[in-house]
Amino acid sequence: MLRESVIVPDLTWLNDVGKSSGENVSSCYQCKKCSSGCPVSFAMDYQPHQIIHMIRIGLKEEVLKSTSIWVCASCEACTTRCPNDIDVAKIIDTMRIASLKSGLELGEKQVSVFHNSVLFSVKNLGRLYELGMIGIFMMKSGGMVSNIKSGALLADAKLGLEMFKKGKLKLFPKIIKRRREIKRMFKKLKRGENA
Image 1 (spheres, rainbow, N blue to C red):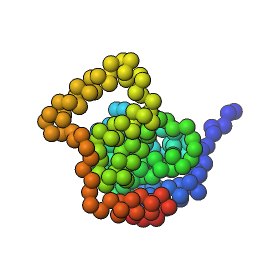
Image 2 (image 1 turned 60 degrees about the horizontal axis):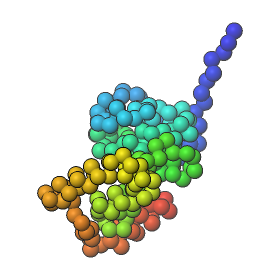
Image 3 (image 1 turned 180 degrees about the vertical axis):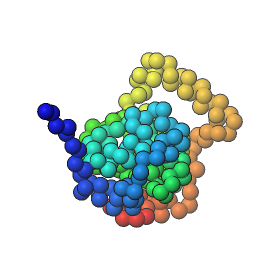
């Protein structure tokens, strides 16, 4: 008679996730409200409730390599819908940080490059500078050549011109006054301190 394999939760990792996110992952009872309210769940390999469940049963590598943690828009619809007041968006953000630190091959390299490009802009300017962020993303993702060959770069440039004409895209960044405070927050977060 064959025995079914039993997954034993990695309680150390579960505790680490709880400490770094400040959330009690174990209090999730899988009602799926987070997933049903997620506007980008169609693009995820695992739904938000599945990510939480995978954390609970110790599937660390699968979570850290998943596309879902990078596709998440951080809109917090999942957090708002949770009947147990679990900040699901915060847990997913914690998984992004853990994924980068893990050294594992990322599930969705382009999305993580985009994420880091946005953070670079905010860290250095205090706010998002779309044109600069797009430039950084193109350089780091290696998408420039393929976009030129496919004609996507020209289409993007036309769209950018229309946005510029309507005042939705700025040629030069608007720099906020208290940028040093933002940089200090990023340094604290990198050290694992609360901002």
